[in-house]
Length: 352
Image (cartoon, rainbow, N blue to C red; front, top):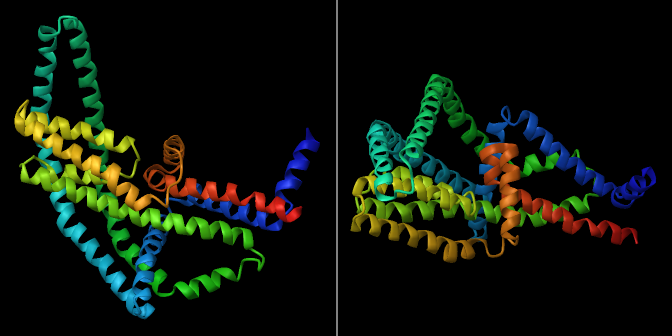
């Protein structure tokens, strides 16, 4: 057994570049797992700067100097941040507060609806409905307790957000402005022979950058496209629901199904079984259809080349490790694993 393990290690890790690549991957995982919360502003700044770098490159290809391209890209970032903070966030908070006030009425209507089920469908007994209502009420009590605990921590959360709003934009500014100097400093600690790590990073950089930028663009397009019919038809909480729909594209397949439930419930309690309810759901499903069949292939046709089962497994695995960030970066991280696997045989070929 020891000889088998020794032979496997010698075959796959005899090249120093393979050891360097594994060291990078292990160091990255350790940093995120153990110091992720402490370094979260830094990670957020690096990610945003990485996304904006693609915009800087596009401006430089148009003939603009890099510093001018950097200023334009950073100004667009600050403008978008201001629109979100002073436009979208207050509107969503207002609608969520209204939803919390209206929630008891929605609950009462839901309970009345459940109580009518035995009359319409005798196969369900009254005791089963009462049991369902009891379980539902207990879950609501748990949710209420969680909301209270969250509200007690809100002061600390607000302070954390304020720190992020100052630190992250500053980090993005310096990471973009001094990118070349930072990379030169970082290369000083790396060995000169890093061909394998460079080839893996080159493949991942192309796919990861395009995926992240495309996903952010998809969130905006889907959110706006959903908001328009919801607002035109006068649906309650249109901005909040549109934001949920936009963010749902982060989780492939599952997100679209999950966000349909609250939209259908709110629309049902607002209009009931009327033509308005049908029209709204048709409009919503049209947006989902266009997203899945036109927008996603257009944005990600050359980026994501994985089986749907592999994507779902990646979302579950990395989401379990790193929460929301793991869900968002599940496909790029899976792309990294795929790139490492594809590049690994080149080591054996060089040895042969």
